[in-house]
Amino acid sequence: MFCTRCGVQLNDTAKFCSDCGSPTPNAPQAAPRAQPRLSRPHEGRKIAGVCAGIARYLDVDPVLVRIIAVILLFVPPCPALLGYIVAWIIMPNDPLVVPAAQPYHA
Picture (spheres, rainbow, N blue to C red):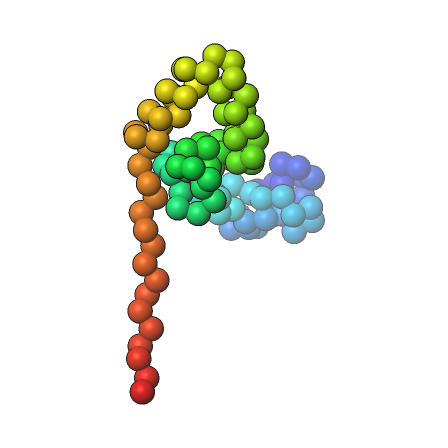
């Protein structure tokens, strides 16, 4: 087997090129990143967590989503406010994470 990047001959079981370090077809593949659920987090929420949940889903800063939401409230106000309330009702909360109980030592 030859490296497709630098052309060095490699062992058939090599996972990376010994010369340039590029991965071969035998290299382990990285697991695809899971898309987060669209839900309202318990931490980082200001009113209902709708903007924080949308920001987490889109992988952007929550402040940016909040600024856009406030701007949309002024141009036309009724659909933006109604959309926020609908999202508040429809988007589920994140499940509560209960810390594991510590054993009691007297």
